[in-house]
Image (cartoon, rainbow, N blue to C red):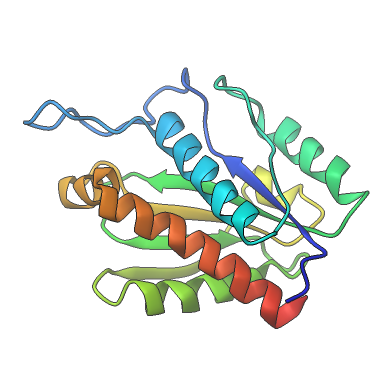
Length: 189
């Protein structure tokens, strides 16, 4: 496997971003997206490091960093080395399942998104795949490398949220990202 690529990871949202949290469930638990995304990204980075794959967290701060600044940081790294970027999020809006976004007609992001969808279907035969969608979110539109945004289940749907907060769910989401990155490197790098 060619490991001459840097994986950029964006842990979506800061602690003061309004609304990015689950309801408080009857048992008193609540998922805070900023905190959860950072835990996911840290675990993904650890597993990639164990595989000898270089990765960089582009937002080490807990506070909200603008999307343009996130893209600027990614682009600065991409000027020096070959990169892909994954922006990690939890979904909201009352649905269920997992989905991924790429941009419209730019930078081979579709290939990366399609590898994630294939990997999700293999790793999660028991969960709903909402598929690959295209939308020009700032972080993926302004980044000069293949870039996707993962929406890892719905934090405002109790069954999805409880799955995310479980050790099993957390580890399966981490493994999805790592497996998809490895699959992309093996296929395209």
